[in-house]
Image (tube, rainbow, N blue to C red; front, side):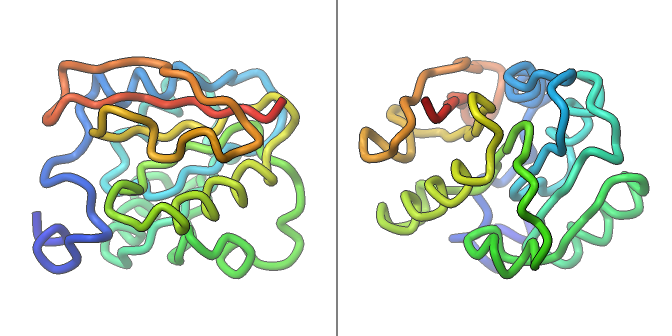
Length: 177
């Protein structure tokens, strides 16, 4: 709630994601696919916990969190995962040099609908370029439509609709073909 009041454009909801939404997001990840999993905007770590419960080893998890308070709490809670305090909209700078290995999945909890369409598209295209072939880019939102439509080189599909979340949410899955 504090974050939403201080920075309304960077916080997408006044409450953390529900366990039902977190499980629906994590279900889109293949825990056996080799490589790291990148989580953008993990917030309080509800989705992070679901990803780990799906079988992704903590050492394979890289989280980018903009809010330093959240990042510090995540680093303490998930000590074996890598937590980076930085801007997910500038992945090259935030991940740094040597981060060229493609990810097995990217999960985004970023409030994309609070951003202009061009900024959303740029983030999604940059993220898609960092995935293994066929690996998912998972984005949840509270909107009726995907945060980025038809302009990507990746089709989007509805992975889940979760009523048991406040507000109800949709899980969108993008994959490069």
